[in-house]
Image 1 (cartoon, rainbow, N blue to C red):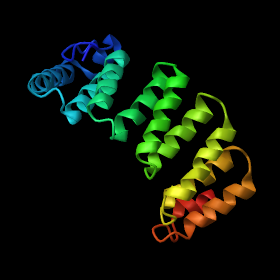
Image 2: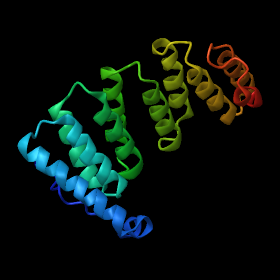
Image 3: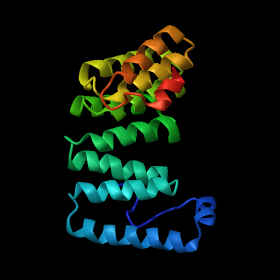
Image 4: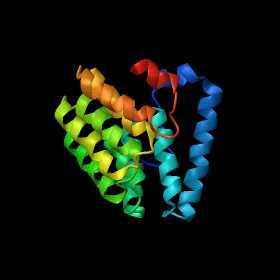
Length: 192
């Protein structure tokens, strides 16, 4: 590991002021305990994820990036670090090419995780301002996510509603309402 030292929180002072010194100290101690464990077992994937989460929480994006990049090296077959790096590169670090690369790698590893489709679609829409790519991503989920998943249809419906394609939005909201977990769901009925 050649990234930012694990024990260094390098927190945003504004965030520390907002959460208070007691909570800051709690996270600092937690990070120190994780660093102790990593010194004994540098290949513990979950500890590297924990380091990244803590550093990202405190707006230390470089530290979070370093920990997630190392987590990928420790366990290249786990999609979590790739997806989180996609979000980090896309929104905080403003490196869209690296964001898209990491999102894509997360999909190759786990094409059945619905949140990955939503995250990538949001990235395409928010950061790259490409509703076409966002739509393609959401529709690709139809091939890999069980059609009993109510959120599959509500997310696609919401996308079309936001794009002012009300006919398509209605089609997918109605499909959502027909899923076993959503029969008579008031939120979906309201969207319709």
